Length: 275
Picture 1 (tube, helix red, strand yellow):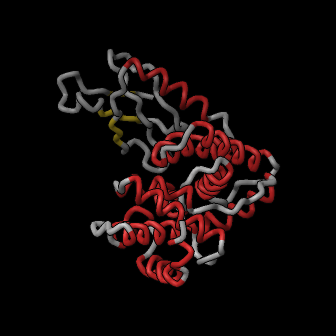
Picture 2 (spheres, rainbow, N blue to C red):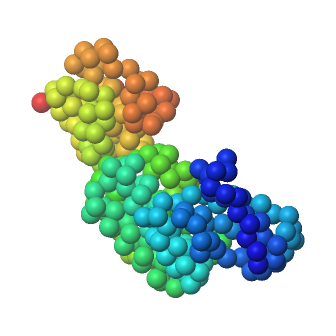
Picture 3 (spheres, rainbow, N blue to C red):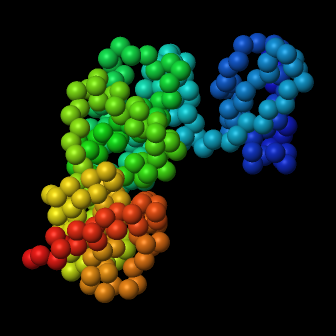
């Protein structure tokens, strides 16, 4: 194997050196090139022979050893373990950060994911991120953290129907008992995003509580009931600046769903006017 590197004054200096490989050997990473800055370079494959030219990306000396250790450790991991680590990292680095979940809720999600993974069930052919998103959805229910399916879907990139499907499957494995979510849990966060005053927030909370108590709009989602309750409270307290479109942008419910739920609440208006 021969490695020919251009001198340091090469225009490629900021991105590493152009390396030429004349031998057909197994894929590996060259570690000792003999220069002050050692680029990590992928060598040629069997098909292209010595026609390959790879530009090694410059890695700072302080990060070089960490990268080599990480790459070396991956060679000894099977596909199942790599999938598990990918799911763990996705919970911590993506979903927890973007949904602003507490460490306790994230730990519950990791517990569900670890339980499902260690139950002897194969992850081959399954979307690991779908399983992770479903575990996060169940964890939010368990920890009573108000996060809608749409929020989890937008962050994870997984369709809502797939999250619902896998959450049912995972709940059977981990023995998760689904509790009925209440719209009151969502109202405070929605009102904070809409910058509504405290009286409007309290009125919306009472409307949602009465709606659940008397089974008004029981076939609607909790986010839709919370949206309609906020809109009704704003109308009763003459908050003209709040529209259905503004509420829709925050809650994720459609305008049609909010309108229909609001109509159902208006039919039972006498329940919400009683103090």
